[in-house]
Length: 294
Image 1: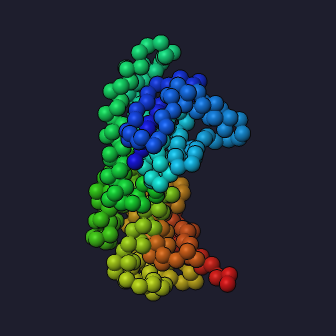
Image 2 (image 1 turned 90 degrees about the vertical axis):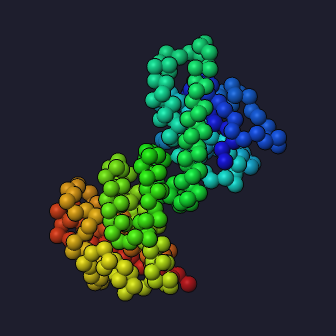
Image 3 (image 1 turned 45 degrees about the vertical axis):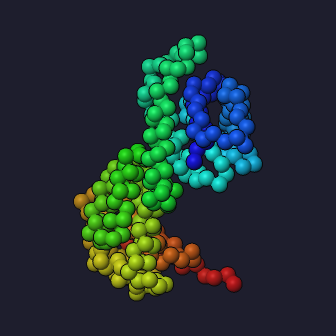
């Protein structure tokens, strides 16, 4: 659970602050003091190199940061809480705050009463509740999807997550193609690989209920498409995930993740090495099996 939420300017001006969890054992830091500290530490982190400050941990408290342009968004939580929820909350609320108060932020110097931002309190409660609901229903979903993905897309995937496994393969193919088309290009393959890995693991546990070897993996994959396995190369002759798509990069991260997840073996990695969507004849996936170093 997030205890406190802040929206600050990079110059040290506090714009919005709310306390969500009252805890008598937690020392409340004055908002303006925290804004000044955050401004200084963000500037210091920027001077050290590329990238932005993402997290500060002080004993049993964690401060998750999102820094973009002139704003700093921060969620404070206990160290035993789920950081992935906080990461999504700060990213989503950062976008929502800028969208809702675009005009008010233009030229704002702090002399106007800060209560113009108070209505944002309702949106903070709403977004946190949605993220917690997703995490409760699908513990690994938020961890596998970048915070930049729109929450509505994640919610829809969460609603159909059980169907991805229970109604394999028809619902898996249909819903995955639908979800894939809503992802930004720069996150699509990574996100689909992570999703495929979770689905592959769950489907294998449900249908096979024992360690998955090459033969068992291929049996699962043949429910998706006509396929073969030769010299650690899996070939899908008809891939339902990239059918009708034309892309510049390999497009079937879900299948690569599905195969790797089905094995559920840390010594096995799978990567797509050929894709029909980029003009290759078939979609192919290489299975890398690491040797035990014992």
